[in-house]
Amino acid sequence: MSDERTQDRQAGQKAREERPLARCFRCEVSEEYAVLIPCRSKGEDLWVCTHCLPQLIHQ
Image 1 (tube, helix red, strand yellow):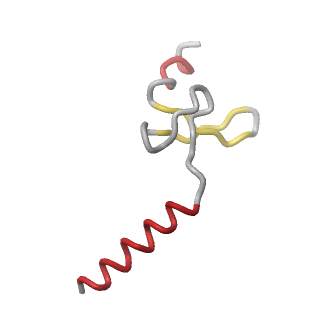
Image 2 (cartoon, rainbow, N blue to C red):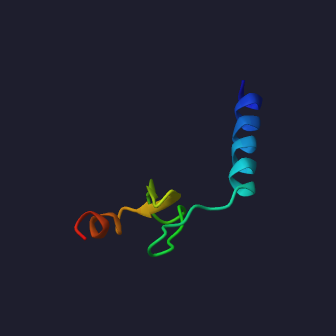
C-alpha cells in the first residue's frame, strides 16, 4: 500500500512541475505564495489573488 501512495505522490508532483503556475492578473503573485481564485473578464479566463479581490469588488 505504501508503494502505491509513493507512486501517487510522485505522479502528482510531476504533474504540478509540468504545468505552468497560475498567477494573479493584477499583481502577478503565483499560486505558490497566495490563494488564487478563478474569474472571467471580457471573455478571458483569469486568476485573482485574495489580496487583490477586494479591490475588484469595490471598484
